[in-house]
Length: 514
Picture 1 (cartoon, rainbow, N blue to C red):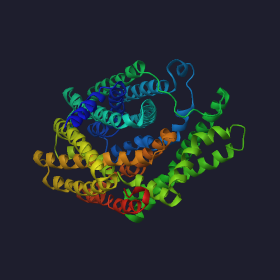
Picture 2: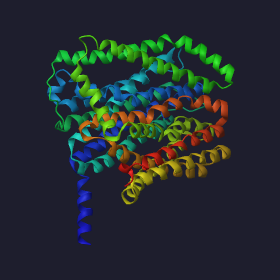
Picture 3: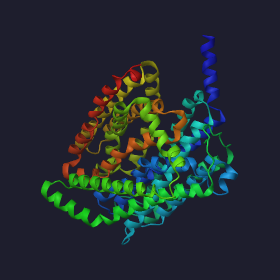
Picture 4: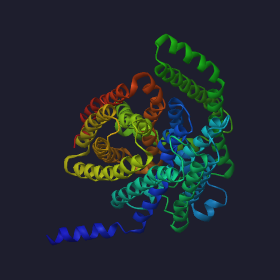
């Protein structure tokens, strides 16, 4: 009995460790941007009279989270002139990304979506928010791993998740309540209310910036065996810039033709959502193919710094495939890409659904955001406890099954309409299962990551985790228009079924049986 008491005392004391407290504030900073791209922005645009299909397209701005592995090596390697010497490698990038997030949020606040041509400008600013927020996530992950040993990582992760959820509560429920109090409703839209709301959200990013100025720089656990000059770093950066410019150029150049093919395919299939998904997937694949060819050509020029590129991009990937073998590695990556698909696709349009069912912003803020937050945290603790006692794989199974089952409960709410009691039941089940599944999934991703390549490998896993779900989620509005809410919820639930087969294939391998 006494040893157990001592253990509890030590655990509680460890939560007050400066590194653990730091991760709480960084979690808050990381949690602010996401819902300002998703649910809060969706309600703003809906109140402004933007049609539902266009509203959900804006969720694609969060695809930056899914492609952050592309520039994670740049952040890992590239120094910021003067600032890196002053603050250190991680703190310099943290401060720049946090201030950039704040500026992006403030810029969004200055755009009224009801004005002619404003949606294009807003789309650009929202994309910038997604890019800067994803950059902040990359640096925070690297800081967390480098600033403390493995014995502190569980506590730091718990602290980060708690801060992240409170940040999401602030930008989700907080922004809805603030906009409502300032006078914007579905019946009476007020741009000034949303303008003030987003400006206030920009100020909340000061929490992360102040934390960065206070903390100490962590030591670099894997210093490069090669020293690089500023010119070599600039060459390295130029390859990335050329790749991005090529991608954007291809995407813009194929816009007119893509619209034509989308219209023709929609007329042929009588399904505009499917036509859009097929055409945009092909368009994305073509853009990436051209970028690959251009980068291969650049590799033949003096711009290509072979050693730097290999250390940054190739070594982390080579290490993962070497440890697990090509076949198992591909199954794992497929599983990572599909595990959250059902939840994320449904989540893109959930707030619009609640408002269409007649729930007010205050009800959504109180039940979905606030009450749902505590249910998610409870689910996370439950998932962690079950993973310790029964193993991560078993909890992954449970999380996948519960996700499919609880998403079907939205069919009940769609049939019942405005019923606050049913909303509580649905949110309780959905958020509890989401928290449980997320806890097991993070534990699984941590197991996959090699500490020598944590920043890049974790960025790859977390990017892949959201790439397909967010791509499909952008069409959720069109799906609802074609299928109705009941048909959409059934389809979203069924998307999670193949995950069970992938877990089974992974479990069969010796490395994951225990």
